[in-house]
Image (cartoon, rainbow, N blue to C red; front, side):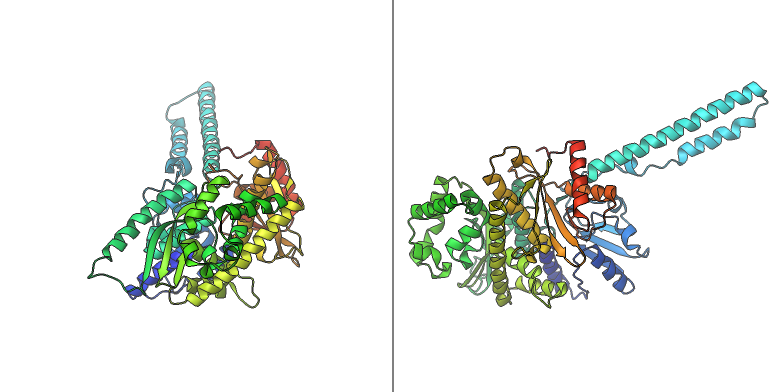
Length: 541
């Protein structure tokens, strides 16, 4: 389902290999796949490990397993279903102790009303203990009636209170600590954490905190290998902590193409406008780099230019208002020739995982993406990088087209954009990761380009055709663009309520609840507009 899960899978494979443990690996893309896979394997296995899936639903209710089946769930999706939290017999949640889940107390959710019923029956049994007349019997009946009414009122209050608590707990979707970082094997944990940053799943503060933890582990490991006795061959893999540029795939592209297709620089310059193109030329001139050098592949650039390129770019970026052009990250080195940033590997694996090539199943794509994370298959990694470049160019071109043709519409409480059938590369955006990345890129670009202050504070819903013959569209909703955003997403619950109120057919098959397949899009959108207006939902930050 995502690159963090792929990295955790690689870590578990390595650990199982070391301990000679046999296992079966089954890739799943959604809840239907998960249910089918469990039915096929439940007779053969007792223990099931679920990576980045299963935490945010009542798993036992969904799968109906035998009593002896045990599930180990390592999942970043939040909130965790309360039944999974309080069922420690069959459900084993692999969660860090310092992860604050904010789970309601057991008594507030699972209240036992036997005591109240017992009190009632006790009162009824005392009814004939003493002789009484009609008045006495009437008074006792009145007392019993009042007690029964109070019990029902208390039960109704508890149900209302429980519904309110669960709504507050479950209304927002967000992500916890990277699963690969939680299991931890340095190289893949670095890539898994970077996946959360690339796909904007965690806050910047959370990323910086987790990257600092990773840096300490990497530094200790590298220091151990500096001794003469433990020195590594130059051909061995080395991981280094770096402050590198926020220019996507720039070491495997030309500097010019990377600047044009990176979200940070493209939005800062507004490259979909003539003024933006002019500003880019001024930026390149300020750096003092020959245009010939900038437009050729990074590996072919003069060594003298590459040596201090990062400092030159940072200095010019500060002049043009891009003060965050550098980011804390990690680099992976295979000898002298092969160097990849963690973000390079994330983009490559994501492109392979959601490849739209014909005659390739989801399982085939999964295997290819898994191979790209192996050092022994650099050819697969490079093919993933080539696909990632095409994907990034498609995103950039689609963003420019949507803004220039005013395809982003204000629907009152939210923004909306629909990619029509026939749009270039529309098939690429029928995949959840690609559409979500496009949605985040488009909202950031729109915020940079619009003069409407109110629209800058609105969330965005984006839809693209999924299956034209069946009439299904894939819909993604994201919260407003903000540096202080807590990355919590309300759209999962909002889509469900809108579909229920309109009796629209939907297919919730993604592990992320903010992504859905919908058959009747117009009615769902109209219901969303009404719902948002009723509750005045404007995503406070």
